[in-house]
Structure formats: C-alpha cells, structure tokens
Image (cartoon, rainbow over all chains, first blue to last red; front, side):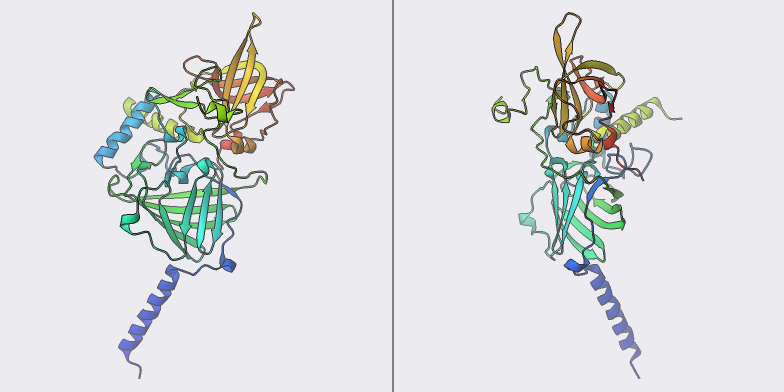
Length: 264
Length: 131
C-alpha cells in the first residue's frame, strides 16, 4: 500500500513543479506570439486614464510629493507649465507607457524590444533568464533595467533602476526606487494589454495598479522613423514655462541648415 | 457641492491630462481664442517633434508678415491624411489657429483650408482609438 504521506508529498511536489514551469515557460521561435504591426495607446494621455477624475487617479502620495503635485496643478491654472519632453528629454519609463505616438514590438525568444517613436525610446526586456545587475552596478536609467519571462503568451516584466521622473504631465513624481511589474498580453487581434503595478516606497503610500491598452493601427503607410527632436524644436524655456521661437527671431534655428544653425 | 477651488483644480488637471497630445506644454497658446489667417505657404517643415507651417501674409499696405503654425509631427500628420506634399510653397491657404497669448504671429493650427475648399484637420490623427 502506498504511503499516504508519500502521496501527499509527491502530489505537492508535482503541483510545485507545475507552478514552477508556469512561472517561466521557455520561449522558442515557434511559440512566439504575433505582436507585429504598429500600435498606439488607447485613451487619454495620462498614466492612469481609467477613471473620470483626472485629479485623483493615483494612490495617496506621501506629503512631500503631494505638495509638489499640487504646485504643478496650481501653476497650470496660472498658465505656467514645464514638461521635460518639451526640451527633448525622453519620457522614460514608466511615463512612456502613457504616450500617444507610434509603438512597435520586436520579440525574440531571449529578448523583447518595445520601441516607441517618441525620442526613439527602446525598452529592452531580457527574457534569457538573466537577473538584474548587482546593486553596485545599478544606476538611474531612463528605461530602467527590465527582465522578463513568458507565462504562456503573457510576458511578465520586472523593472528596476529607474530615474526619478513624472508619470505624465500632471506632474505626479515617482522616485528612482520605483519598482514596476507588468503582465503584457495580446488579448485580441487588435489589442495588447499591459497590467502594471508600481511600487514606490518613497512617493506612494501603497502600490498603484494601472491597466493600459494599445490598439493596432491599420494604416500600412505608418512606420517609425528616427525622431530628431532638436531638428525643428521651436519650443523654448521662458520664465518657468514654455514659449515658442519664431523664424524671424534670433534664437530660431532653421532646420534646412542644421550644421550652421546649431552654432547659434 | 464642489467648491470653486476644487473645480479649478479638477479643470487644471483635466487640461494637463488631455492637451498632452502635443509634445510640449500648451501654455503659450490661448485655447479660448481662435484666429483665421490667410496667406501664402513659405515653408512646410515635416519634422519632429512638431511640424511647422510658415506662411506669408500681405497687409492692406502691401507689406508682408510671417505667421507660423504648429502642427503634430510626421506620423501623426500621416494619420490625419496630411502628407509632406499636402502643402506646397506658393500655395494660398487659410489657417484657423489658437494664437500665442503674447500676440506674436504664431499659433497652433486647428484647420487649414486650401484654395479649392479642401479642409485639412491636423489633429484628426492624434485622437487615440477609444474602442
């Protein structure tokens, strides 16, 4: 007669092994999902566009960061707005998840590239089993360091080593200690869904759960080209806000003569 | 009842969250005002982060003044059906725009009407799908 305890032990071990396999399915070329095509974010250009109240879509901020957020909103009422994007800095991660421009996925068994048109931002997600670099090699990165694994057709991503940044133009800040996990899956032929959890012990009082969706664009003429942000960027910083330089003004740089004009 | 302060904060946050189709802050443009300017295309720069349409406007005295209108970058204009050759130097057009607050001759383009009556909507392609 089989020992009852042994059965329980073996059963438990098999369940554990199955879970373990589930936690990291080995991706091979023949199993790669088809995420081809050109994609764009669905909904409003805000990190969490799920609710009706754009003022309060994030969990309570710690007081210091709540005050900074309120300052941005107050400034906006007074037409004072500053956004690093204006000055050709990248959106960075996780803000880039809420940007509206063209996006593309390149999937290989050992790596996924999530390519954003804006500022040529590329998120590299390593799915070859590597870990994050050791602590003494981590430093703030625009896209962070992302490792991932596949659970069936779901890409599970873990990102650390971020720069301090804003989630969107409303100015709510995340710290460089933010840790972001994502479950990314194509839920139908035209939709990729990203279930995001941001944990940030510095700025947030509890984890922030956000779901974003990306729609496939049908127009075959669309493609991602190099985004040379400084080529004809007429937006300039003035009095804490944003202004425009006109072609008749001395600070203007004519994009048809880039080599000469950049010396201005 | 919502206080005025709360309503104002909500409105500001809403503006911040919806205007951001533009690559940069929109603070310098007055979206409560519209101008309609007729002129001749001088240049149409199909560039990132924004395209720019520069036109020459003749006044009653025969002098010319240059106006500049901001539009979205190439891929967003392509999504709106506006191609690099859609606006050619020398062509006469009418531009409706949100002007700069400080009165200088520039704005964010709302629509462009060509001589044959065709209307171009440069913001059409920006609207992300909602379904």
